[in-house]
Length: 356
Image (cartoon, rainbow, N blue to C red; front, side, top):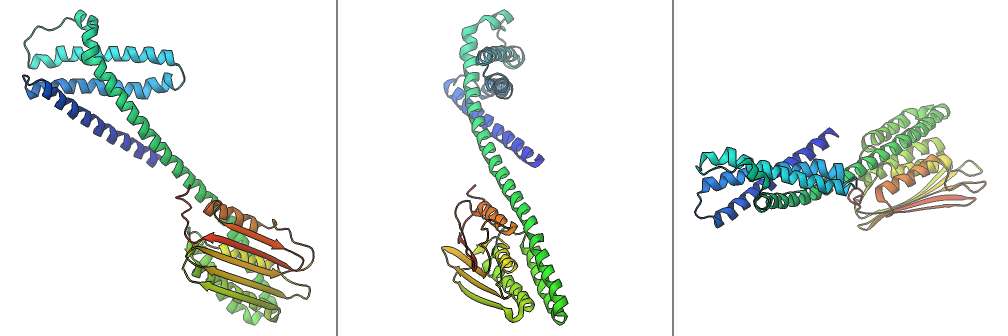
């Protein structure tokens, strides 16, 4: 937050420096073209004196009078206070020139204080109008700059919010996934202790993927497929001949996907799948081309129809897809008494931060 405020302050300072420098040079060129009989030094001094009070007046109006009165819909007070401020600084500007600047290069009789205060026509044409013009242009551009900064802040906050929500989802998903995997290895160590070392090696690969790939925003689809194969090898050790896997993979383009997207569905299929005789049939299909990525997994089940909205895995999955792809995805869930299937269709290329 401090860095953002510092960036905004630097942006405002830079803008003001450029704006007032450009205004000074424009006024200098205009004054020089209309006053050939005056030397350049006098013109520069006069314009610097005008610029000083224009900067003060414009900033007072923008930072104090507009927030204090105009933004609060106190329009009468804003009009009165702005008029008084312009008159006051016009007088001060005139006094500064007459009593401070002109003595350095002019021997003419100085105007009296009464004349300075009451010569409204001269104050209006030579001081107030240039001050009003400069302040108006300055305020317009400051509002444009503020709108730009606010828009960037909204984008930044939305990005931070999205990343935080994704971290929350992953923090609930990863322990859920790892707990089930550890539980499977525990069961395997009891029933088939001779296969425990191989299962631990496989688990190490899965841990590596979850820990190092999981926090990333996107990963290659082949990396996800590799860890899915490793996970299935672990399940084969546990199920033995009771597990039947059908897999169809057709990857023509190395698309990017959110980490653990497909792996979580595979884990979900093994956790909730099965049939009456204790066996399990898993059918996995993955297609990826330059338009989209399609992942479909089906597992055998028995008994009553399964609630398609149940389970932390699928709920988190849908929320994660919404955060990554908004409404540019398809999540199709089908359940009957013998099969449960999930299909995810996502675009091959989609910058989820750019579309927010």
